[in-house]
Image 1 (cartoon, one colour):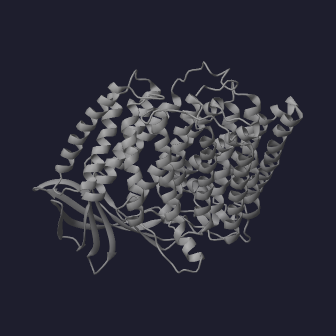
Image 2: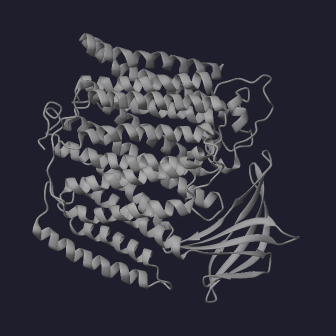
Image 3: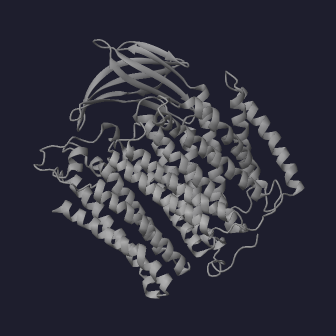
Length: 637
């Protein structure tokens, strides 16, 4: 009964979404104000029904209703309750329902926060979001029904994939989906602007907070996902250039470019069509990410769906949305846009450079992700594209972006004063000295480390030095830019100075790495809620003094009969000690791998600064002077 009600709620949401996609546009076309006003209530209704549907799916997990095939495939009576709830989005069907739920929440928020916005603009945006929801409702009902029944119901479920039985699953996928789907709002604003025949400062003004909110969620999801990969997968790294990792990175890069383009459009009235294109392509990359994860086309540790019908339908949704949007852009965009004139070191020029570099970086990741698939599809054999390609092609534009970020705090609209150029030179010299000195402090000198440190210090010093009249918005910019620099430092130092060793150890044996001595004291047997484990106790000393205890585990999940390694990690701001417990090689010895990873926490610390900076900018008290007039008046370029 409960699953049937969930399915019925989803069908009801489809009906309301169809009305939402038609009624407001019909009202605008026929000049019927009543139909236009239906947009907000219909958005609330769709959100309510989809929330009810996903809640009932969660209830089915919590009550072990194994008559629901999706529950039987991804849960078990021994699974802890919080993992049962997280299992709602742990497989294909549930994750697609959560995707739709996220879209309905964004739609309801657009309706709720519509104060002072032109009602036709708001209603058109909601209608476009409703049309997207129609497509995904149909996809779920026809190809990915999470409420499908199985008779007779099994006595027990298969259990959740052990890799996903972690607190990271509770937050990582939802944040990613909120980020992916959030850019649908900007896509809808872009389509609304094209339909109305204008993309002015007003549309950018209303669109930018939604881009920022989506960017915050996506940034948090990526950072949390890399942290989960580091401590859960047991390979000692945090980024593998896996297709699904790339699928989240591409809309993040494009979304970052979109944020900065919208700033110029809002403040100066230029870059308007570039902002439209970025809004379209960022959402396209979000849909592409969904296709990669849920189609099974590309091999990935994240991709669990291999049904070709689902992949074809996702690709069809992507094609309809993007081809339709680009066709509308070609038909409605005004090619006779005004020519903007500005100095090479003006804020407009720097933001344009940043946009170009971010777009190039996105294209590099896109090519590296899909080239192997195209190579195979053309019958040319198989090829793999990994870290060497990405490191050699992706790093240079990122270094150039750091350079631009160091100049930006001194820039002004249209031009830069000569006095600021002098300050720029002074700060560049200081950053060169400080960064080079920091690079020389390590036992081995690498030119690339020196370059990265100089540019990162340059970003931090210039942003801190030239912050004026500190407000919440400016603090947000400062934190976000410094966060990028801190992450760059963490990536560089952990990549060049990490060390590791593999040894065979058992109780009573020792090993050394990077000045640390590891003493294997004992092996314990543990019993968890749905697994058994062997746990090693490893005492770490340095210069004869005990530093920490590491307790890696090798778990056996009884239902799925899978073995998983849980690494032992000791960390501080300067370095991590990391040990992975591998297979048992004889009666009492195990294959162990020790890692020493300097400054790796700075990768995630910088990410947290970016998220905090985004939150500060989102919640800053923006001027309300434009609220009533902004939609009618363009900002002069």
